[in-house]
Length: 307
Image (cartoon, rainbow, N blue to C red; front, side):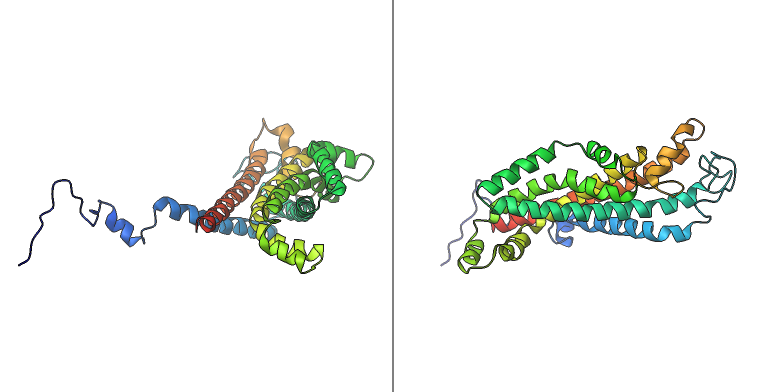
């Protein structure tokens, strides 16, 4: 004889009752929309950044006119002469806008690589080396942290040429200390790990320990800071254009275009607005990609730590 036990009023069912959005969640694999959106941000923004960078490199061949060709009166409105009008000399604004991104992106990329390599090397040494040498190096890095980039730029350009090459050491000197501090903090988190101590006991040289053991395990913070470093490079390069340092006329450059057309902004604001908008779009795209990459790396690290 079987005994049937009826559920009481306080008993809960073993299987939860599906809510109104259960079918949708099941169709989407049970992944919350916010998490799916957050995981898609780095991929989408990364594709956008790559597409934008690739476009700046091929855009000069799409220009309808030469960047030095005068096609109409100065400060012509969009549609009057050409698609976007003309600049302060009557040159085609669309052609100069298409050609002006290549130099900025290439120079910002070179500055980012140079400052990133130097800052990463300094950060590894600061986090691994001990003793008087490390203390002195720490104080030197702290000293360079307080130097504004424009002051460094003006010091380096005094008595020298004002070409684009001067911007690379400027950004290296002003930006690498920030990278070094972040890399140092990440290095301190893994320098006492068992695999590093095992490499020391095996007698591996210091360079091999830094490159093979520590650097791959701090690649996340290094990649995350690269996007911010690229934005910083764009900011310094654009600011240098207002000071007359960097790309020189009659070359086309977004920062230089803003400076050249600023005196006539009351007559026609488009020659200033278009290159400024291009710089903003580039910086915001890189910022979104860097932020999404940082969140994804931090989320992956938190998941591994929780596991």
